[in-house]
Length: 265
Image (cartoon, rainbow, N blue to C red; front, side):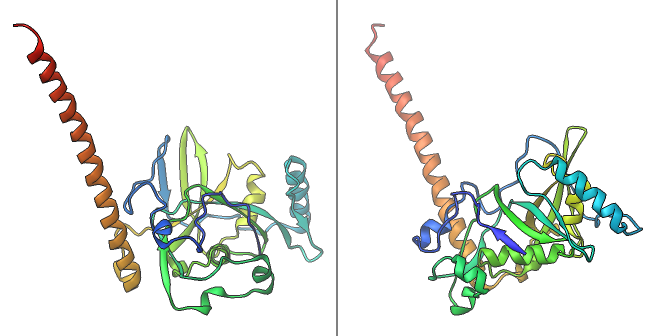
């Protein structure tokens, strides 16, 4: 599996100041996902066809897919019946991720040589990945959801447990945006092939693996300390915003009083 580095420019470099990395998000750690459409999370695994497709059926589907693909990102069929292609994954993480502190970002050489930069230091820090960033992955028909998640985390040197994350498929139906959690054994490229290349019909989203309650035991002590730092910083920001709002309101009231007192009775 290969990862295209066509990420949003909002990526926070590890070489930047720690405070810059901490507070890249405009909303809080507990911010709610916002959408113009009603969204639903369905946590049952995706049901694929019970009978595996024949080689001829796969070939026909790939030919049809490539005819509709306009960005030169078609699928290629191998003699053994497996095939390769591209998927795009939207990153919608509402909480900060944990990365190694004080090391340079991964280079192309590191990616090719499979260098694990995270293992070079025990220091950790946390920051928000930019919302709505998109990563393009080159995978095969045998690549599972679990491998996609691990590949994304490795690309960004995220050292959090992969079980904290889940891959969802996003579809549209009757004006609603539906999110369906994929099983770790599902194969995203097969779903992409069935749906066709149109990302409006089907797209993939990486989100937190929500279970209803926040499982604080799953976080390390440094992570929890970072969360407290983030919350304290955002608390101070909110206090300053409220103070500025009422200072401005008080100023207008005082100006109105002076004007009314200056008028003849």
